[in-house]
Image (cartoon, rainbow, N blue to C red; front, top):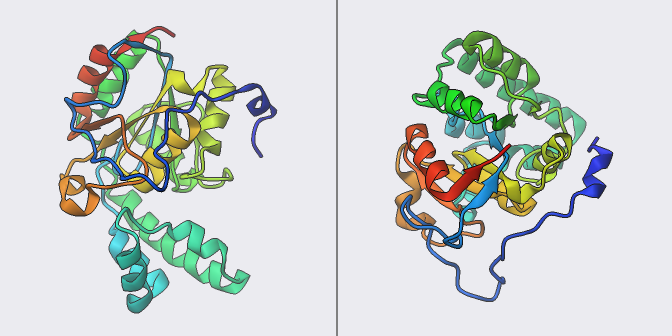
Length: 253
C-alpha cells in the first residue's frame, strides 16, 4: 500500500504535451527541456536491471514465451516504446497469471546467475554519498533479486521497491512513495533508468526529473523520435551522469 504521506505531497509536474499537439524529439545529453537555472536535487532513484546492472535477461525471448509469437508481434507493432508485460498479465485469469509468472521467474533466475554491475555504477553511487544525496531503487524485478543485488555488490538503496510493491512502474506511485519516505518533493528528485515506458514515464508522471540511460543507442533510432514521455537528459553510460548532476543541479540534501 502507498504511504499515507503521499497525501502531503503536491507534485509540481513539469509541463506535459497535449495529446492534440505534435510531439517533440528526445533531447541529447547536451540538450535539455529545463530552464537554465540550476535546480535543487535531494535524491536520486535508480532502476535496477539494465541501469545498475548489465542487461542479461533476454526480454524479447521472455515476452514471446509468455505471449506467444503472434501476440508478441501484434503488441510490438502497436507500441514502439515497449510492451508492459506485467500490465498485460494483470488482466488474465489466475491460472494464466500463474503460468506467465513461472515463465518470467525462470528467465529472472537465469539472469541472477550472470548478474554483473553496470560500469560506472559504483563510482556514481560513491559520488552521491560524498554529497549526502539519498539513493533509492525501483524495479519490476522481484525482492529476492534486489536482495541478491545488495549482497553481491555491497550497495544499499533505501527504499528499494520491487514488483511486490503495488502499483509498479510506470505508475508514479513507487516514486511518490519514496519521496514521501524521504520527505522531499518530486521535483527535487532525479529518476534514472534505461526504459522510456517504465522509468522515464514513472519519473515524469510523478513530477520528477528523468534521465534515460541508452547504452546501446537504440533510442536514437527514428522509431523513438516522437514519444509521449520525454526524458530531461539522455546519457550513454552512468559515467556521464555526474556531468549531468554538476551542470544542472545544486546537490543539497
